[in-house]
Length: 78
Image (cartoon, rainbow, N blue to C red; front, side, top):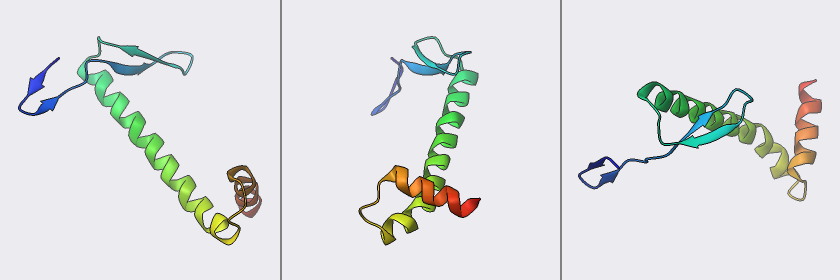
């Protein structure tokens, strides 16, 4: 493990596979680490967009499930 003053960096990194899955590896170069960071950022942004879309629907209907809110959101887009 690389150690800086009060900072421990992870030894294992998740890497994408050709079948769109993920494996955990100890052998990742800088390029792979940055690709992983960009992937996580994209996933977080997609999650935030989904919340922004579903939040108003679910506020109006607190007992609605996420699946039901998605159906409503998708029907509003169509």
